[in-house]
Length: 347
Image (cartoon, rainbow, N blue to C red; front, side, top):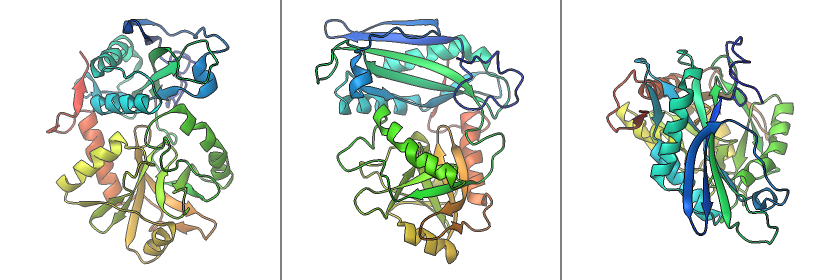
């Protein structure tokens, strides 16, 4: 387990292992409900080999960031949306919902304790990982009767490396991420392990990310591995609709709100791979980008597909992508006004 102290000599802490020194834990039982929220040193978990969540996938999580603002204060970005999505994930997996106020209190406790691990570098942030799992030692095929909630954190740099650059994406026709009636619209652990095979295929093809298609026809673009996707068509921002197989991202929702304020129209519509390719060739789609907590807003420069590869415009970051990224990060880091109260200052 790496610590931020061990990685202090690096300019970019990477993404995923520069852990801070504390975590927050809380427990749930049928008799007591949620109880015992406490801040404690980061430590390994002691679990029984028959822990139900390990065997049957009763595990949900969230991903969000805390930012150091220009005035030195620490802030969360729209944490209530993550709290409510965490509740939706719990309902879908027959787990107890964590009250929003407990979720926020846990985040605030951890950020207040470990904010010193974050430098003043505006490209770095404190990535927070809330997690809940079925903790009962019982292999009966049913929901757990006890649960543990915890939050840990790590200092995060750029998800795709040291510098912001367009990424290449691989269209997966062989595998599907989600299906109607499944769990594609919630954040459960079982959604992500099966995606690693396609991600390896993408890496072998020289790509950083997978583009997932619908599971029925394998032609409609839905999202990317752990992030949503947007297309720029003239003055319109286009993103796939929330059909139940697409995760409702907080960054996605924020960009749909920011777009009209910057003079862009927004549209939620299905876009096929063939249409994406054809509209790029015709110059109708001039930009595409990934968006999410980790990716923020990251341009897509090249698409690899069995039907033929293509570049999006000249393969560089476009002006709309750059403007949206700046507008979003300026609000998150306190450089711009926050008319909707999206920023949650940590006491």
